[in-house]
Amino acid sequence: MQRISIDPITRLEGHGKIEIFLNDAGGVENCYFQIPELRGFEKFCEGRPADQVPQIVSRICGV
Amino acid sequence: MSKLKLASYWAAACGGCDVATLDIHEKIVDVAAVADIVFWPIAVDFKYADVEGYEDGFIDVCLFHGAIRNSEGEHIAKLLRKKSKVMVAFGSCAISGGIPGLANFKQKDDIFYRVYIESQSTQNPQKVYPQTHYAVPEGVLDLPEFYKDVKSLSDVVDVDYYMPGCPPTSAQIWAVIGVIASGALPPKGAFVGCENQTLCNTCTRAKTDKKVKKFYQPYQIITDPEKCLLEQGLTCMGPVTRAGCSNQCISANHPCTGCYGPVEGVIDQGAKYISALASVVDADSPDEADRIISEIADPAGLFYRYGLPGSLLRRAK
Image (cartoon, rainbow over the protein chains, first blue to last red):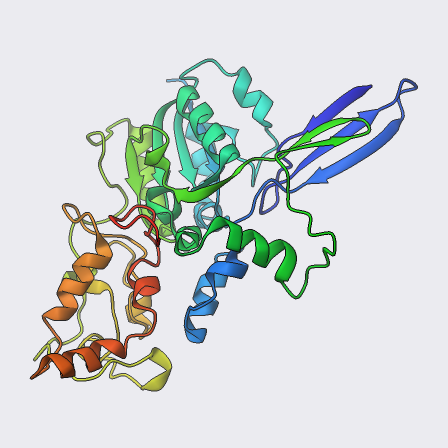
């Protein structure tokens, strides 16, 4: 089975990769989209003052 | 003269540094006149395999954004270091961990639980966590290892220059690109695109008595635009933060949050700020000093907003 890796996917904000598996006939057998990143804003915003949170979460995506 | 070969990459970043670079607007055409971009995921379609195929030292300058959060960030940092003559830690995240570095106040297990199980927008009844290797019928899929701690770029590779800011201003980026293109590089280890003095030194607000009886959150008071924000009881980080940002926040009546990091010779911005606060708090007794200081909300998160991994503390226990 042939494997095609698109790593990284480009021209967007963030990280991603795509793994495509081809069967013997050359058709797509399966395809996986993966996000190889996590920063954890969901957790590290906890305990921060509410008025500071917009300044912090604006760094989720600067694009 | 052959054109410069320029690369730019983001590890744990938001893309704000990339956008600040693109915010030089039509001057990007001038960049294209002196440099070929050989890797820049936000803008052009080169793959990791292309970089692996370059000879060592093929890239003249690599502008590296983002903190080192996982094994992929470290791997690409090492790959780009090997392929680049000059490595620039670009922005707060690469220099000292930046906003993603706030994760060092938390534990990896707690981050995973919150994100993949507990969060209100997650449906994961089987409580599955991401695996570094996962067998599917067609083969094995790989994901990077999420590290216990956020690291800075210089924790994993040798860094030649540092360009601070969250993000660095576009004017400073343009100036630094000019220096790079001219070939007149500063001594190794230099901070570029900034000044070696505090923001406080460049601030035009009137400083008078430096006595603070009460601290406020920015939403609690209407400040006088002519007077020092710290003296009005706001925790402005200007006394311990490097200048170079064109004073954007304090010009908009918002206290500095410290994104340009400490000035040369200061290794811990937060500790320096505690020292600065001690000199302005106007207390007649230890109890009163405690009361005044306790009015500062989330002091650790504020004093180490952009630099916990690069500080002496590095992380919370």
